[in-house]
Length: 574
Image (cartoon, rainbow, N blue to C red; front, side, top):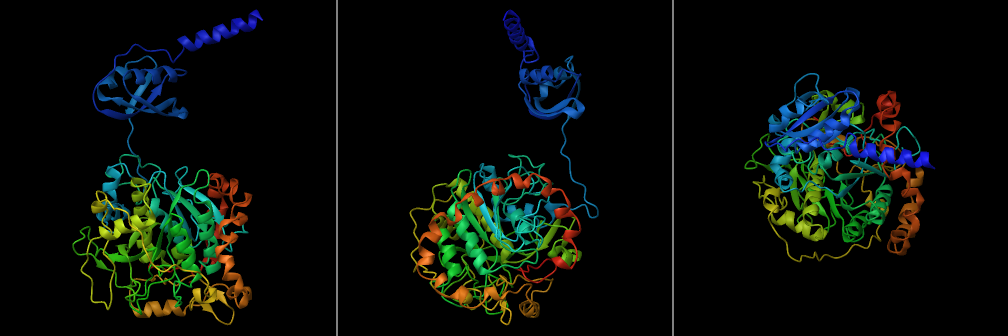
């Protein structure tokens, strides 16, 4: 017993007089400077204490060089360097990823994400501390792949994979098509080296609209970009059911797709699902489509007047908003349902997925400095607004989706629109104005959707009648450099990438999709809340293991004919 007591006393004494003991240094003055401190072997604790005594802050240990990062008042650098425990103090400079080729400068590219955040006013929100922190944005799309800009710990959380890829371990959650990753980066991308509090002045790192928001990845489209309306509805249902689960705060839902359904939103099942999400407290952002050179009809589910319908603005290759106008390809509406707002959506330089379908098809002309990819469409515009919504929700956490929508519409910048038969929307989002604007009690009052219509009609014309293969590509974002009717017609005539008789006939259009099944327990019960959606499969672990670094996303599985097809929303990737 004496021996044990003696050892405890000795240990306590060691703790009191060891490296954590005060060094007796006086606090220094001056601006805090980032440094790397290298120490003598075994003296890291003493060096860290010296930093603290000087009024500095200790950062991350770097054991490989017997050192650590820190910030130290400028007046204390010489004193710190003179300490016996310290061998070297050097400036901690930012490391810039090296691009092979052009030496891309985002600040000089009007369509970079840096300038998109300038044009929209997102940087004004950042300056006030609103960066999307604490807000989850659900992204129903083609998945998200672990490219730089989306690999910061906690940046992406996997929800369910409802796509046809879900049974293949090397494809699950990942973005073989390339669309979802592009959207995720616009909404909330942030390079690992980007420093919180310094986003405005960072012209080196990739930073999206809401850099501290989190993406909840709900994959519905497979590596060909193919999905069905039924899968999207199931995905929206999951988002609604799990929006407030422990650890989740889904307040924004991005839907960068649509169909050309002609049935009324009051009947349409897809519009109904989006409306249910809206009324559950989620700001649903839906792209209006790219039929501006055709009928101009707003796509489904943006046809529902409750949701926030977004069209694309053309910034005309400048960073000034004075010459912005609605993009020629962006759908303008039919007088009954028009876009609510516009956002930059032409040649946006977002994150690239090497070897994905769109990368293989359009990489030769769309790639920017190896990491980025240009895309145009109301898809990109919707992603911009989803990021903006995350900023506004952080600023006003108690506001309803109706109030967020009113904020954006009421502060939008009027644009000089080209001649169109009907409204081009309230204008381009203007976060500089929105930041200081209040919205009183505001409640939208439209006829509610029942969802009792035909699921087959919700698909619109986008399926192959003989085989009933359905592809959710009603938005028909344009591929190629030319925004013209011919390019759109070619897309609309393109064959679809999958077919299955089970997606046709009464099984999808009868009573199973109408009546009580849409309003009862199937929307509010246990069907989406069991263990299959709440365990490790969507709690973040899947983003940290071999699935991010092995052959599943970097090898041959990303190349070859299996990744080609016309089936997703087909943005202009030029």
